[in-house]
Length: 243
Ligand code: GEK
Image (cartoon, rainbow, N blue to C red):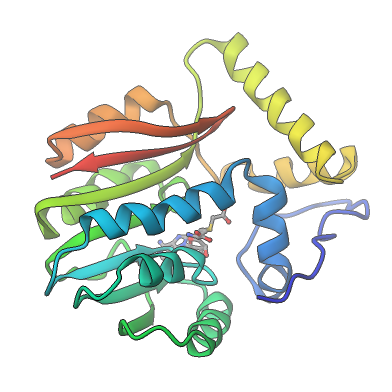
């Protein structure tokens, strides 16, 4: 993937507006997510390893909110020779166009289909691995249970959901501490205080983080039999939810 440096919030804006997954974001996305999400590469790499363990012959594997297909490709390469079909879904037209291009350049054999659609309304086929890598956090809170119920009922026995999310913390001191540590991480990645502040403002009411306990109880309510936090760095996490 080409890596153009993310300077979207480098100049001061009178009104930063809401963050959008448009062509400007797409052009800098690999750099943006890499420098903004601590542990992103590790998580994507591990999605490949978890797929290797959980993908079941003759089922589907989904990457919901696939963006440019990083997790889709990790799944494709982790799959080995198992005969599965991978489906990536994203509701950003610009993301989907660029994602299809990336997938075409990859020569692995597992079939991949990239669909432009909304994960709230799309129907799912029987699946063994479903990935929501930093996507659920962009859905309205009131829609999240229904999406998770749909995933739980599509998963075959022994299937798994990999759910990566930015977290909130119940204790306000811990919540602020994690935000501060994350901002230090971004500064160390070369983002200025202005970029950090404007991006934070743009994501206000767009990215809605929740606590691990909230995710855990919603996942149980949705029909998952167990949930484990397998990765956390500051306020960024990834969970496994088992069917
Ligand atoms: C990665 N998983 O690189 N339906 C479909 N797609 C959606 C919806 C929706 N309702 N809402 C948001 N999206 C990727 C990173 S980015 C995370 C995921 C981030 C899509 C949105 O268009 C975007 O591409 C993606 O979810 C979230 O492993 O930018 O922090």
